[in-house]
Image (tube, rainbow, N blue to C red):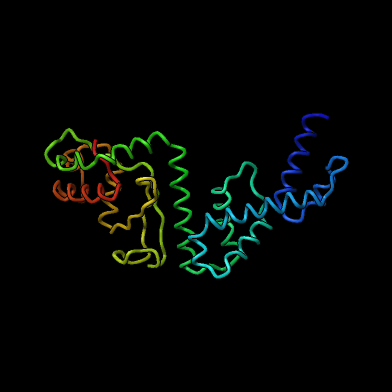
Length: 248
């Protein structure tokens, strides 16, 4: 048997066993003595595990839907599990699929947006693990340096590298301080994912910091068009308390 034929058989079996009611198709490639019934038992077990993982991962999103388990079953029937796919990648695939399967309300879209942003943070942390760990280490001792930030121009301000912006259409997941629609910053902190809904002035200052960091307070104040040194210092303190900046 050539390697090409073998690879084709493997792809056929993988696809067959990732979909419900495909034991008849897989049965065409079974060895002597094996039966489609045994394949069905194996496939059913895998599909149940897949359903349980999806429901566990998307528990947050499920709160915005009535009968979310029906959508989970429909997704599994419609979309095979990607080769080497993980629970996170499968959940992300379902979140991309949901808008094609039903008309979503604005609140449902916000729940999906929130969950997808969390997935993005997890992916950023995995892909840039060194930067993620280094920042978390500095953030854990920020209280030691923060009182000195206004007087010691050697200290540099570092922005959390594990972050992403999303946008909420409604006030459902906002704290009431910022009216919808609103840009929301998701970021990693202390092993979790946190959010910050900043007012427009805060968003503008944060965008400045993106361009200039790592920088000292004096360096930032010398180029900032949105705030003076004292205002930037107060802003840094707020960001440090949230876990968005570290001092080093």
